Length: 220
Length: 240
Image (cartoon, rainbow over all chains, first blue to last red; front, side, top):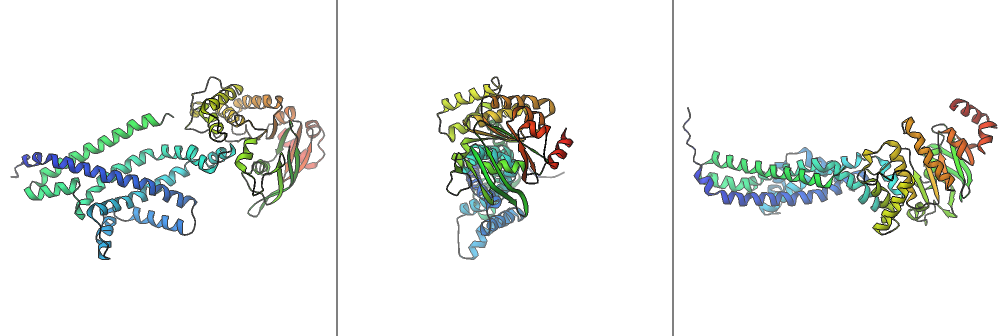
């Protein structure tokens, strides 16, 4: 019916390279996630408590990050700034794009988490003589973490998968590496099939780890 | 002693407290009764500085609660507060709920704080619930946990904001009993309450709030048996 002959050998020969590239994927995704958590937290607090320009900058960030394609955001840091004479390395473009996008999504997650906690919790904490810092770090934030934990796991999976856009700005993460070999050997289907399996396994490991950590952290 | 002098409180245009003058002596139990919206709860929040006031003053042992120079976090250690919604901290076990503030606010050592917490939990009848999370406690138990948590700071005064209103009827008794024990031990208490039986039996004085003022104040016998004001009579006729 169709005359395509599968050739898996080149793929397996370059498997070590693909696995190495998957480490690159995990590294850039993890760093983007970490930065995203920090910035997302600042965005959430800015939108909840900030006013004036602080509020508006945070809101603009969230709106742009969530309502435009992630690919465009990556292109902005690559070709957009490039047109203005500001040049980043492919790695920096991917990291900046992913961080920008993820911070926006996490910002809204965190904001929702804070709003889910009854305001009376803060009152109760303050009435015991805790200062604002203590009330936030000991009472509110631990509860927020519990609420946003699984959405955060999802977001991390999303960052790992989205890092494949790196290919389009010339970054040799897992997809970029796959594309490189695929075009060298013309075994396009085989390469991308194997890479899909690698992504699948990575995500499964992340989800498993997340579940394991949750069972250790959250006892209520 | 808590003395309140000419206290006015607005929420935007809403004049919630319209000039409250009151004194609560050491060891006294004052019950505050009145209809919803009469300013009872707001009054309590003004005493521990959760709500700012627009006019007048609240002195707790001579310290002006609303003065800019007052360290509210320090002052609040003198004023235990129990809320209608009991507000146990869901991520902490019962004993952690109680031990946390002594540890981080009073800077007790962990073992010392745990010891204090254990004593207070036993005091309110939760001696067998140390390591239980709040979601496994009934409303009445959570409210007693909140009382223990406030007591662990060794307060001079306890403020109760409708501590039993959110409870199922069969759980009200255990919380009132705990409050009774505190009163008998000589704790100074201000109780905003809808429990007329409690107000009558336990308080030294009862204040009836009506539209942001103290309409009438006196001994329970006087308020409940010979109310002077028409408003008080009307209110009591309704709640009886």
